[in-house]
Length: 598
Image (cartoon, rainbow, N blue to C red; front, side):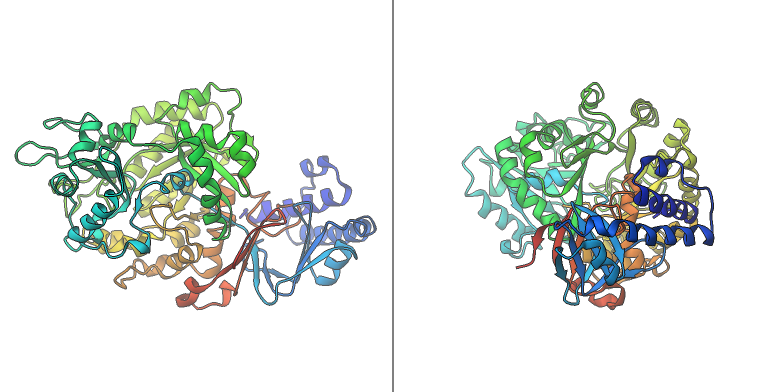
């Protein structure tokens, strides 16, 4: 998703380069702009077709896609093509079918879409790929087979049934625990977990990934004792008797994280294909691990993992854990590639989760802190000085900066940090603020000035908006993930799932951006709704631009990777209430099918 001038200039440069095959043409293309540029580019593209057709006609490796709706996502308005030709993993022609047949040659394979819709492969803007390798070990409350866990008693029963299969003294790890979805709307306590399973270490990992509840055996394993005070940037409440309640959020989680069981490399390798297929079946050809720890960094860049990957994967080494080892490793440079793995940038975290009430705001939560303390507006997990010092260290080494910031006060911290580094839009450093959930309108011009790519999280309007309304006024909740306001200001947003915080479901992501409707049916910010094309941009061109991949993926255009997703219907003509029913039929990575329905 480029600015109009840049798009026109590149169209001309690309046409010349494709015609004469010289990299110099890409570097020194003409300076014309406007309609004349596009007419010349079109003439050159047609001339190239004539000049190259005889040579390409002999190449039997080409594949011609036709017979359906092909949405190219190339431009700021919807555009379609009759046919696409792929050769050696790249797109070599997009346009009329007659021209495609000439470009493909008589021995080309033909893929008839049979009325389906072809789009560029979806680009994951932010999720936690590596956590998917861990959720295979434990009780995942998102699994429908577990049954109803919507009250404290039902949840405890499910945990007890699962834990009975774990040897005494072992770990019972529960994923996607959500206190807001319990009938009682409160956290499970340490005492309740002790009551069902005192002889095993039990940990309920919160849906936000920013907290947990532990029983006494688990607390003991983490060397957390009654009477201890929470660390700065952490939440660790005690009851009236001074006993820890078992609730640990943000930095208070770190001792528990250090002792939780981790899968072996063999277990990770065994889970790898299943996890990448979760992405592929949603149409993703690029996935992201949004906070890569040293163990996962070593595993995912290993030859064994590289050999198994069928889709591309971006890693964001986590600034707070072992970052010096990354910076001192000559093999781990900004943008370094290990097979299908790319080191994209360095991830920082400034605050917590709004649904967990640990995000950092300039206003108070109506419900108070996670343990009910008032007043409470959350807190940062680091200081301005610490963030800026570490950010400068990686910025000066050429790394792209990714910052987790949910509350408006944390977003203020991110802006102050970028300004301290002197980053401006003209520098083209493209810092990304992950979530940017509760932005204020006055923060958008700062993003424009700095050149921030906001990756929004429209699923919040479905999964968590009802919870947010218990804490904040309507006008605050209605401005979460402000797509419309950001686009109007010239920003290039993306949309993400934050998997496993919310499920991997690309059509649900589209729908939540278009409908902005909560579980209870309340619309959060009618004026910030996306149309179908914009919702697709946030899954293709937007995230591709944010990671400097706009010349490789996100569009169906000659010269880009032949990464496609085939849908059973056209999202641009599908009513909003039916968007979630669209099915992914096939996902294609560089011309090869990596996933197909049935």
